[in-house]
Length: 152
Image (cartoon, rainbow, N blue to C red; front, top):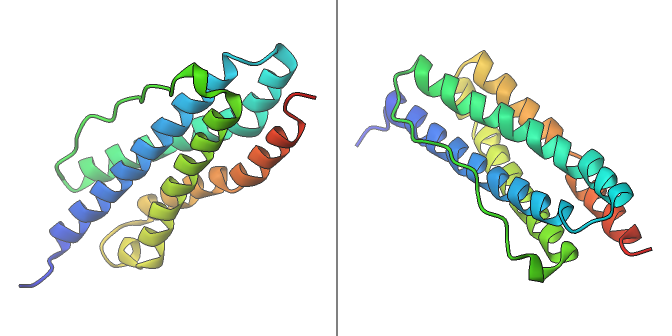
């Protein structure tokens, strides 16, 4: 069976949707962690992690929606995630957020490395994927920095 362009576009869209879902989890976990922190540490979490993930999430949703609309693809509602239980503690919530953010980045990396955005995509899609990944680029370093000083 021939893999046609419309199927490839739909597969990419579905993968982008999975990345958006991972970013929603990351945001929810970071939000849950923020609620447990003092103001100065919460501000650091917001600067180092929450804001970049929030921007990446928004850009990923916009990329998903606009790509789907341009090619009349089947989209689904992209919904926020629920944070983990506060009893897990800040460290676990932040680590879960990192895991989800890295999972999203991995999905997007696989899409880009496949060259499918070039073959069946368009410039706006490629720019959107690159922008999301750029915002996620410092996530691991920011998490390490925050966790290193947590509780001091």
